Image 1 (tube, rainbow, N blue to C red):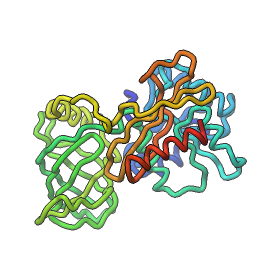
Image 2: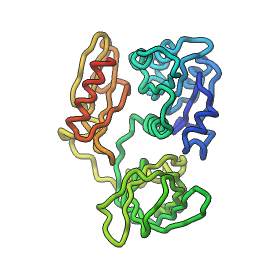
Image 3: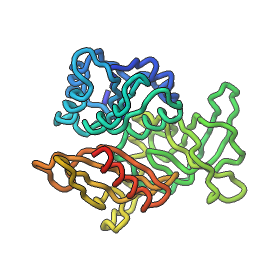
Length: 312
């Protein structure tokens, strides 16, 4: 297995993780459980991963030391880290693990949607913003609730993270099994998606929806990546609001934080915070640390700065 979408868990029950995150129910093999911190670190070195999910009680290493070991490893320093914190842990635990290098810390009990959203985001932090290309391909959708209701629609644009769907009917569902008929040798690919928003820019007689992909098989990702690379225009020089460009750099104690320019998403604006040790830091070489969102570019940047001041 490649590290594309792979999740390693330690100190948490991988079976519970599969049950709580719906797209993992359809791809349970994406999650692998390590029985100790050392086993986790060895697996990261050998095979890599997109996301590490940690509990607070590991049998062989303290949690903070485990996070620091991951960040020190040349093969693992860019992996996303999510820490699940039991309600019994003392206040302030979130700040401690974030300071050690975790991307996010979630305290139980928490809403299932919150966990699922964070897992989906952190699986691919470094490449969250991908180009979309205009396409007109047939889409067959099925509500996975067992009713077997199908609909036939069109995709208006496409990326490895989602698409704009033009549906001939209103969809009363949250998750959708989708089959895309792509103009490639592979032909039809199947994905699991969620309706993220209604899309009024899709005109009559269709009903428009912004679809977020919850699970995209490796074969489908390769096909869409190839289409995007082929169809996307050459990237222009970065402008003031270019996603991924460094908007500002903040020094705090022994760390340098890089705050990226806001990138537009379907729900607002996304800013990534990257971090590197001050000693040896080079611009653009910091590792992913956290991701924040806001309703406007200014709000997202202010949220990022506030986060650095609180947790940096």
